[in-house]
Image (tube, rainbow, N blue to C red; front, side, top):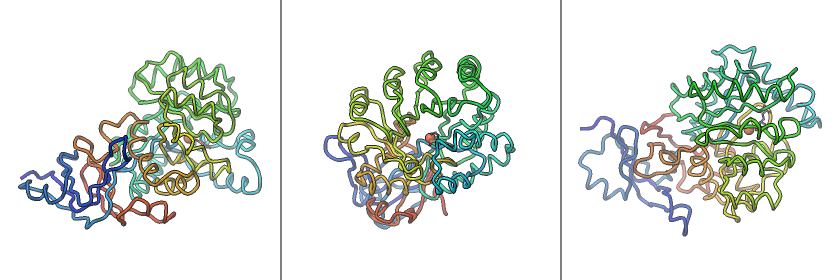
Length: 405
Ligand code: NIG
Ligand code: FE
């Protein structure tokens, strides 16, 4: 008998639907067989139980909803501490941008980062990843971005590599090399340093599976980012933080750079939605950031109605979005952005997998995908947005292994 077989039975399975008809196809009483961490068979429980002679370890979920493991495709983990005092200053009326101009914000997190030991940073990241796991996150992106120097950015990426090796979740590493202009540095000098030193070093060490930049008045211009990213290998996906507080041309730049995704989009105009639709660029929406910075929510409905691929993510970071779990984000997307529960689920599974380039191995309950499943304490996904603030997870299976809270 195979020791590494695990079979989930009697689940209400959310499988990928025929795109022309429905986002999800429900298998009302389904079974999922996983061998060595990979899904090998999906079907009605009665067929699977009759035809398979050995089910291995059996998990009977008694009619509960079973969804693909959730994928958080945009986080700023690891970081080295919270900034609750800035949050309080914002509650008293200061703006996020004003705080950033006074050397708070990202530059402040960079100081905290430099002062923290590797052990402290790793411990905090592990806690955040564990908390996310208990809320259903089985794969997540981690970004550098609080280093603001070649050495510290490489340190961040090496710490992410260590976390990827030890955490149960799949971790995708993104080099956010343009997050804030490093203090006492001319923007042009930093751009040159990234292009000539940091990027080649990160690529040579195999530390990144994507790169990212923050385009904003308080961060970098499209011209700067264009200069740095234009000569990248085509196989390296580009992401852009753009249109978070203003329109700066980030969408047009995304087209020029053939970016895989643009993230934030709180300030997005109809012609920019058109551009994204025409060029097949994915949108990553993070209602947590809009909520905490009191910006308008990104136009999710208009993007979806125009056929743009919409992913959802936490943006987990100490400044704009201290939210670390995806069910809360799904609840915000449904209740405040007019997405349907089914669209929200697609946003944190298959669409997020696409953004991270892991769609062949993650994001759906199909043979060949990794055995990442979330069993809900309910029989329908609509319970997630309905019960905002409640952890809807009954149990998590990651890489074919049940995780017991
Ligand atoms: O996605 N916009 C830029 N970066 C983060 C915020 C980072 C921070 O404030 O520490 C974001 O919102
Ligand atoms: Fe972000």
